[in-house]
Amino acid sequence: MGATPREVQTSYDAGNEFFRLWLDEGMSYTGAMFAGDEPLEAAQRRKLAWLAGAAGVRPGAAVLDIGCGWGACLEFLARERGIRRGHGITLSPAQIAEVRRRGVPGIDAEQISYADYRPAEPFDALISIGMLEHVVAPEEAHAGRSVEIYRRYFRLAHGFARPGARFGLQTIVRDRIPRIAADARELGWATRMIFPGSIAPRLEDLVVSVAPYWEILELRTGRDDYRRTCLAWLARLRDNESIIRERFGGERFEEYERYLAACVRSFEKGYVSLCRFALRRIDEQE
Amino acid sequence: MSDRDEELFALLSRASQEVAGRRLEGIDMNARLADFGIDSVGVLEMVGYVEDALSLRFPDDEIARLATVRDVAALIERTRRVAEAAG
Image (cartoon, rainbow over all chains, first blue to last red; front, side, top):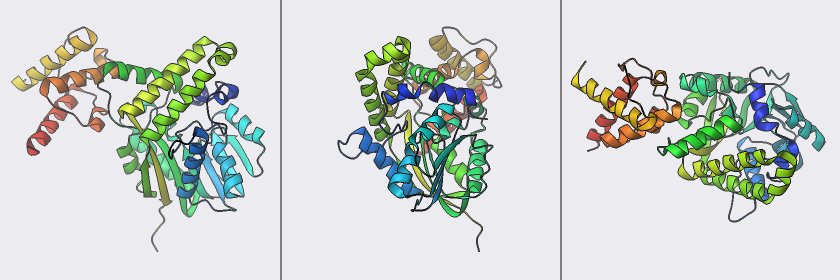
């Protein structure tokens, strides 16, 4: 169901040092939230602050980060929001190594799928950034199984959290279908090469799937935020072209340059967008 | 088979000629678009051709769910009804 561990590792185990050369210093590999002309670093912190607010994170809380990446969010929550415990789950061993290298007290990560995860204690808050794109495989989406699989995801997430908990969720969504053949092919190429086994949800599928388990308190889109994020990544990748070519090969550079350029265009044209949700766990009525 | 079905089959065949360089053989309402050897991007290109030919704009979420020729026929019908109702 969804992307396999091997497919996820294709996306995220291309070398922590490689990603460090073009992501922001915190290593967030997801859309930022810009205000004015601020740099990517500030926009990534702004995004993390918004999601922490959406999840109702308070000092002393225990927070689960579903698809924790290299630990940018967990570190932010520990250092800026004073959480007691931050736990990340991911399928990428390279990401777990980076989370642990940071050495932040109270923060850890484990390699497990959300589908198999059963926490001993429910968490006070959930956050998930850019992971929902891996929950449904393209062939499952084409077979009309998306809603069923997202419902299962939201039901499991409900079980990870205590009653009344909130959930800050960010995901890319598919939006307009490209009618320009070259754009459709480029987007298809980028997805297959960089994110095999994954397909972004459609917003209407999420609205239907989330309903029995989580109430949508707020939904905020950020298509232009993600376009700007990809532009910033592309500029940094190009700034480091000679180092990347030397250490990771010319093919790697060209592949990622083409992929990031396709992402910029896809957000620009509205083929994809970004959704940020503040969700509240639904509990039995008194 | 109605004239309308025949018209649709001819239109899809022209779309395939345009997109994949070959006309569709043995087309019927139950045929799956994927069975004609057209990949998902090719299907999108065909949809664009059909939209232009019929001067219609299909809703994106419905395009994402197209699997069979019957699905295409139903989508054309629904989109026409909405367009007519909206004047």
